[in-house]
Image (cartoon, rainbow, N blue to C red):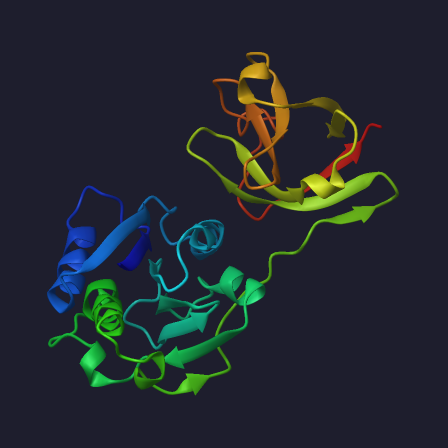
Length: 259
């Protein structure tokens, strides 16, 4: 089975996703296209990179992943194909594959072959006009090294790993905030001891499930990806975590272990 995934910030109130799928299926009607999400925060490359990094490993080896969060579309930024971990990744060279690079040995190719470009190629929609054709050609057997030359100066950003400071304090960062207002951090279960910790002087209880929380109270849980997550039972942690200040992906967060 030929599997290709799509991850974008396009939303679903327009036809952009359908147009990409149509182009891919025109190249290869046998592709099984799976939507990861089209609800990435607009222009937020970091959010897209983290969402892709959390998702790709659950697909069979050999899957082609197309990721398009592309505020630089139409500029001099490159389109690339990444061969990593037995999988193929297609998208813009703007850091959206940063987690892939961090977790795998990767070879990166700059898409230059004219076969990968629809004619005409629009300046505003490389998802349809470059990345979808490239993925379609690869699904038909085109080797990644035929799309263009290998490059080593590809763009990436670092997600600073959590660290222990001042004995019982753990510093991490917010990976993303989900649609329920839960705050997912990069602090892993290995850093957590006891049944709670302090955040900005407040004691936060660690729960085994969302249902175990108390309505209106900020709690924590180790989620199914192994990360520390702040939540409010049937409410929004984002509204309570920082004294009503805005919490955003990339923000630093420091917890103090209580025992």
